[in-house]
Image 1 (spheres, helix red, strand yellow):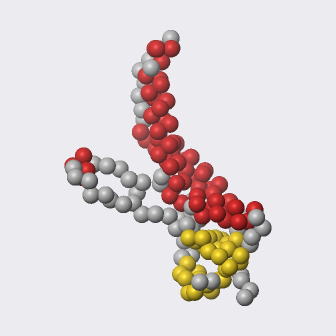
Image 2: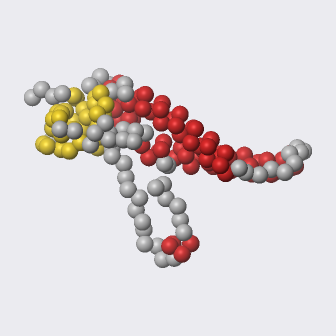
Length: 157
């Protein structure tokens, strides 16, 4: 059977991109199917945004300890709006870079639905591949821990 692609990756987040890049580097013809927004959880709502905010917090904590190092800083504080603006700028840059990387592949910005073990429907078009990688991400699990609702918690969503 002739296939449109050697491999089709469903999902263009960090895992999907890594799988596509690895297969391409091994010589495979790879397509990516992702309805967007492009970038994935890690870049858009998870790892990177949280680390950008934490970095500001770390620097503030160090500034407050300046006296221990013989440094004088005066009053230090945080501007939450500026911290969020910085995070948003960084995430926009990261996301744009990932989108550029994804566009190195045949990219279908649609949902995919399996028709058979080797075929999927993508926006009304049937595509075939020898193999598929499903890297569509995850869903936050709300574990029923007694008292959790009372203290509050934060998820990536």
